[in-house]
Length: 431
Length: 160
Ligand code: FES
Ligand SMILES: [Fe+2]
Image (cartoon, rainbow over all chains, first blue to last red; front, side, top):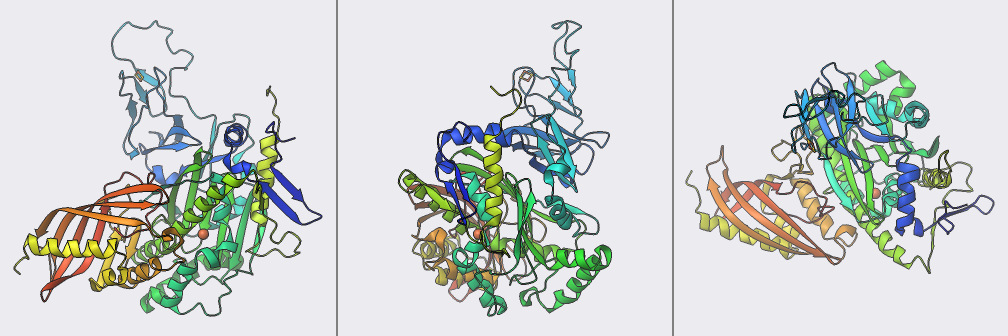
């Protein structure tokens, strides 16, 4: 069984302690076609955060799973997600990336007007259509089959028969809850979106985003930088042989540690370069969280560093700041990446400033680390041109260890096992 | 304060561009004064402020010096082997500033060639500068990309 692909996608040998992925999984068009159908059209995909449409009439447009959507809060305060395509002859009804105070959307082509709830409310020119026109609602903006929210994170699903979001998120609910609990007044997506791309297969970024094994090598220049700055790095084990990895179910996984990473966290791990003045404020921040959430969960929030993979294409990295990152393949060797900063609502200006500075020291297309990740993904993709003669990726690290460490590859095996299962699943109605 | 002439400023900007294009990045970092900053707003919020919006680059003097040091290392993988970088500087304006600095605005087009890929970064640069004897120092350089997103370029691993 290999989903009709005609090649063995993964080799999962638990006895030998070897886990391999065939490099064809990163290069072949037929794999991507199958991924679209079996994975992206069946999984819950991250759309956005409620804070992006916090007031009635707020809207954003965004492509999710390759499809342009309008995400808005209607006049009654209800969230709506419509396909951004005119039921008349198909034009994008909304062309702006975001806006406010909008009660209706006029298609720019022939002027059909749709309410925020998606209903067709006007067609210019009288008497052209019979009374029965749109009685069945088929000329309204079409809603996505499913969408739902968990702790402010909004997801869509293109499969009307999909299980509930909370079931799907499974153990990842805990992680989303931890980041959502940082701010006493909730969390918001900050202005300043990172829209870039990588000329590599999308699954390479999912692997990379929680791969602690590469950190000390790929990002040695980043660690040099914080070493020169804070002089805190001498006892840091740059092989990251600590912490752990948890399988969160449904292909989700987290690579985590508590209090050992050498960078600062605005919520709330002080480092010398934050300055003496910041110490007192950060102590108050930590204290508030510990009081509000209790010691165990509170310490997870203020001391924990977590790189979380939510299947198939969402990353929540709670490290030197919180980044929300999602990506989608346009071709087997090209993906679009969108990333944001998630920050506490009503954070003080001083803390927000620390967060902004800290975020981009590592993260983002001009940070001290992300460009090197992008480079490594490119290098891998180039190497896969040799797949006919050098066909396997090895993802066995830590497979035979009883206690898995942060720098092991269990999170990737978790991803790949789910990927392989979903790719090969047959569904009712499939030919 | 008497403003420098456009000609004087152009000489300085051409010198800066040359340092970047020839990878004399430590020398480039020393063009900034002690309070020097190097900033690049996000593509979706070009008029933002870095305390509020998430910038792509938000360097103080220490970080911009470290950026130069990092880019000169072999382990800066994103620039190994190094890009060929070509700055074209144009549309220079010199304006009154506040406090002790004056303002320079210019457009740049930066070409970057590496791994058979040619990227173009058009930008408007806004400087806060100070006179320093017969030359100038940079208090702040803000690079506002003339790009809607970084989709075509993928990343920004050179200095603009
Ligand atoms: S395509 Fe929208 S009104 Fe015709
Ligand atoms: Fe990385």
